[in-house]
Length: 324
Length: 271
Image (cartoon, rainbow over all chains, first blue to last red; front, top):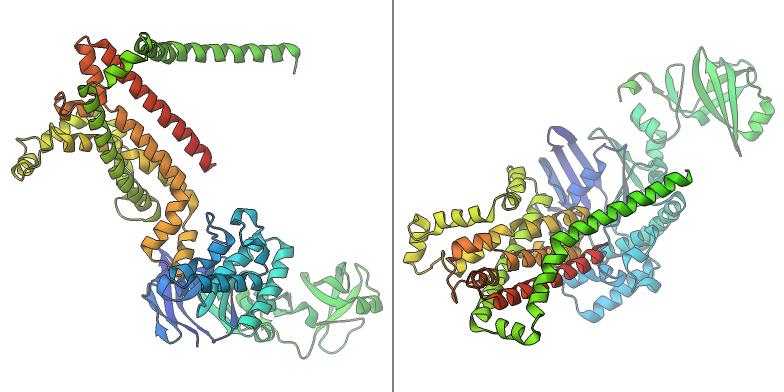
């Protein structure tokens, strides 16, 4: 394990932020800490970096207990949501900072910074200042700066949170590719489940200061441990007192075994996918069907269809959802 | 909007401007202008002679020494306190925050008197210092103390808001990159606050050069010993040596104008 978080608790004043949290991060993995805001994920990341200290518990980095270690002795790279660019330094000096602190020879620094700037596609902008860069460029510079010191782990706190949607998507894909190239153990915080599923190979869901579930994106999506994880990681609808993915609902023209009748209330066509809102015994639900299927059923608002949960689908009892 | 309303607004604006200008003329421009006119009324020669007299030169030297010490001490204290107030949370932080402004509220004469009560020859602290050969009151150390006290908040109040705005993330980033506290301060924090610090230092310098009340009390006004330029002006004027008083006044006014220009320059750098 590259990072082991053992029974960490942390409060800010009277407010508990993390309660007995344990997380393992495998060496070389790309792990997402996913959860709603206020769930404690950023605090956990900052505790791993040494920017906050836990009230109880331990942080072990590469087999060494780092709980009481100052951030500058942990050999971690940290990327902030708002870049934390050194405003008075050029892009080159920003990236070179960690190497200069380590008193590396000038020639080596020049070579290494040039390599890194090439890696993040900023080689043309080495002499610019942060204020002359776009948000995406600043974040790539911050990433190069963190990578320059060859950290044992790379920690990213909502790295794309301040960027607009288009740039965010680009950087996501790019981060995945970068990780495949550099192989440094990486943990990033996000509240965007799509981002976590797309980029990470392991997801840790944190909510209310506790770990709800940890596993691969597939595992979490297909086998959520509880209604919270299920509804956080993808679309859900409630039918017959159970939570189910809307694409796991079979929509049938006539009654069949286990099917229940439903009234169509609204049909929304989103390109290939059709979102079918229905009313079952007075409560609302929705199903996701393909365009072809919707055309074959000849759906009309006010019409009646029959709905059945797909036999292979996994469902969860919905009762506990209200409590989360 | 009607034509009449526009005209009325124009009239109001001109009236306000005239009042402001008249106010400044009566209070500032005429008195300072008169001093400059009196100083240079007989040409540059007398001005130069008056300023290069031994007593004037000595007063200038004392002023510079006291101001330099005060600025140096307040720079260190000011930056340290600003960091303490902005970056740290501790019991008594609000009290410290309030205390920093105290010198602005207390009359300089009271400050001087208080220093005499603590460091005077017949006070325990002052007596002990005198016994080991350090004379505070009626000597340069006391004058430095008084000046430091008077200009205490200037650097803190110039630096603290900029430090606040700068945020902590750059410093934290430097930490994760391996920089220790001192390296982080020197390479990240200090460059971030440099213009604000410069502004605070210049303000502090201006205040130190112009200080009269507190220094008058603790210095004992010993001619050619503890006489600063401001004390020199007053003493010369009392002794009917008007050319010297005016020449020194003009020199102080010129220093003030230079510092004023410097602060303007540093303020604009921060934008």
